[in-house]
Image 1 (cartoon, helix red, strand yellow):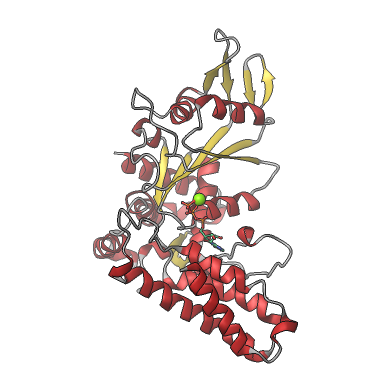
Image 2: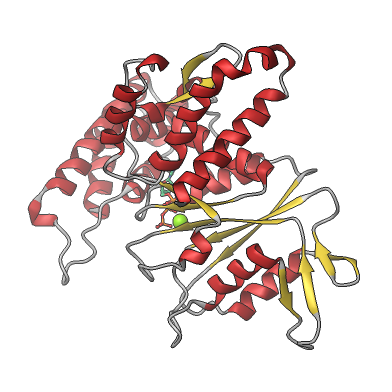
Length: 374
Ligand SMILES: Nc1ncnc2c1ncn2[C@@H]1O[C@H](COP(=O)(O)OP(=O)(O)OP(=O)(O)O)[C@@H](O)[C@H]1O
Ligand SMILES: [Mg+2]
């Protein structure tokens, strides 16, 4: 039901966006099938995890007229109404600019995944609809949303982040919401007129379940979306109305409460993020290493891609080895992108002067990091 609602809304948004372009308005009806298909991909398809491949097969065999390119899956393409064809998200990827000044955790490499999620987030912000990213640990949920926040136009969109944990109460959420809005008139509050304020709720499912089987902060978010109001805690007779706010959230279904109130999730577009594909992992870290090794010897520069493929091999062997399958006692046997990132993060701390003509030493650093992390 939710997916059907999502696909209809998606279709409407795509049509509205295309109608803004004067040169295609006359042939817009020819594009409806592509819009419909794209809407299906990002509603029925977006909430799937392992069955994404089956969905890809189903859509390709059903919508034969649409001529999806052969390579990859239908999730890898977006429909361009001007050129009237399907284009790979990779074409939107921006080149990576190395930055030694900022923290490693804030380094983001533009990939097909970040680009398509940025597109979804932009569309949802314009349509004033919330989004919920669901995925296991280290699938890049937080990174995607924060990367989008770095790119938003501050004149139109304001952002605020709130991390839920098992102690978060509805009161603490209300304090955060209130501290980011200002009084407009009477009991109406909101961001400055003409702007939309996006609250990024990370780890949405973490708050503890109370004796009524509800999670208080989640109920408050639902109330804000449903009614746009909450009560003044100091004077319960005053109802405060909050306008122009939006919620984007992330949750890991394997941590915290497994169940989130469906009365909230029905308001949000659910998108499932899986462990990044081999190519995406390799794109991210090869570019980071290449940027760092620019000042190093040529021999070390050539080591970059080899380090990445070797790390990938170890990573895959570890995650597929039944000896390292997580058990109740060894629950920490979870291998994800974060481990990969830790290895590269430490290689990025090496200095060119210390490794002049010592490529073997660099391999030792890599081996040491692998031992340390795994
Ligand atoms: N596009 C990217 N560019 C650079 N690093 C990335 C990118 N995507 C993910 N990462 C890295 O992957 C790791 C995991 O990402 P992130 O913290 O966003 O995962 P998460 O899904 O929010 O995990 P959790 O559920 O544990 O919060 C981080 O170290 C992050 O820096
Ligand atoms: Mg996170």
